[in-house]
Every structure is written in structure tokens, then in C-alpha cells.
Length: 356
Image: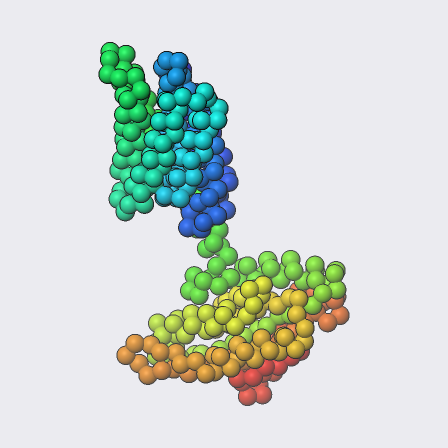
């Protein structure tokens, strides 16, 4: 039996490492897509564990398939847990002889998926939540075995080994799963911090450099338009001096939100630092370019920036626009054109749009 435990643990460990790679780009299971993928993978793991089960008698087998359902419930809650349980239950019927034991196990597995999926969503300490699910799932499978083979000396011996194996495997699986998950969370957060502005949540200047250096050569090669907006808040220093930096930060966040809302989903919005923002616009006509810029300008001009215990603040922006008209511009040339257009907008009265 120790050989069986070792085999099961090797399979679980391999799955956790593969799962860590699969979900490294987005380790948070807030999206339905991630939860569905988790459920399917966990169902495959449980079915694989079941194929390495050992026989108690002619109709009854034992394994650690419930660990797969616990993994799904721990990270994703009810949806992946039920999906994993359903896949495992169907596999039990399809790949083993249909009998009273297989049909009873089918329904018990579905029940386990539902029950521990609910437990997995509870706001309790992680390790407690994990072991509650291990104990509940082990108990339900133990009751299932009790119904099938009854209480005798062999059953008690089997339960001793089964509970021992389940708790040992659960302990090792938890610490390994938690280690991989924490590593992925840190990788994901560090990656986002490297490309995201901490204040506004927009792309930062580092991401701007990477994006424009990637998109401009491609647009020039394919002779497609790429347009750069430079957007600067007019007299922003006065906002900071008059109302304080906390209010200034609030205005920056609100302006960033407005720019993001007024652009299209395919446009890229950046905060380049201070009160300066930029937008990279592709696949659009001249009329659309000006329409997008004017939408941003008028929305900010008409917006009341309401800060608690203060009178509403009004701000405006100046916008400089440049595009790769000759399809031969370098990154530096496009940036200089947009910067010159922005400077012209400020020099000629602010709260306006100038095109290079």
C-alpha cells in the first residue's frame, strides 16, 4: 500500500506543477474560463488517480481521487469542484464494470463535489479549509465503502490505511499547492507592477516604450496608421498647490478613468508620468482620430471632480496628435511630433487639440 501512496503522490505532484505552469499567466480563479479549465484538469487528475487504484474485492476499489476534487474546490469553489467530480464519476462508470458499487460511488462522488465545493468558498483559514475538505471527502468515501463491504476486521484495517494515506497525501498536497500558488501570485503581481502605473492602474511608461517600439515598426511595414496622443492636464501644478497632493492624485485617477472610458477597447492608454498621459490608436480613420480626441477633451472639461469636503474642481487637458504618415517614422520621430503638437496646443491657449 505504501507503493500505491507513492504512486498517487507522484501523480498529484506532477499535476500541481503542470497546473502551476498552465495558470502562471493568470493564477486567480475569478474568471469562469479559469474555473472551467481547473475543473476539467482536476477531473482528468482524479480519473488518472482512479486508474492506479487498488482493489479491495471484485467490485470495490480505493484511491485518492478525492484529492483532485479538493484541489478544484480549494482554488475555484463550487463550479470546478462539481465539474471535476462529474468527470471522475463518469470515468468510474465508463472504465470500470457497472455494478451497485460503481453506481453508488458515482452519486457519492457528485455529492462530494458539491459539498466540498461549498466548503471551499468559505472565508476561513486556508489550511483549515483544505483539511475540512480532506476530512469530509475521506469520510464520505469511507461511508461509501462501509455500505459496500460492511463493518468487519478487513474494513477496519483498510480504513486505518485509507485515512492515514488520505491525511498524509492531503498534508503534502496542501503545502505543495500553496507553494506553487504563492509563487504564481508573486510572479503575476510583480509582472503587473512592472507594466502598470501604481496610481491610475493604466499602463506605465515602461509599457509605453515597449508597446510603441513593437507596434510602430509593424504598422510601418504593413503601411497601416498608428496614431499617438499626448495628453497633458492644464495647470495641474495649481491643483496640487491649492488643494494638496492627495486631491491631485484623485484628479489624476479620474482623468485616467475618463481617458480609458472614452477610448476604444483596442486602444492602449498610458500614464507617462506626472500629469501626462498618452494613447496609442491603431486601425482608424482621420475622422475617428479627431472624434476620439475631442471626446476625451470635452468629457474632462465638463466633468466635476468632486472631493469630499471640497468644492468641485474643474480641469481641462491639451492634446497633441501625431501619426506615421510616411510609414517611415522612427519611434523618436513620432514621439517628437506628438510632443510638438502638444506644446502648440498649450502655447495657443490650452484646452484644445493640435495635430502634427
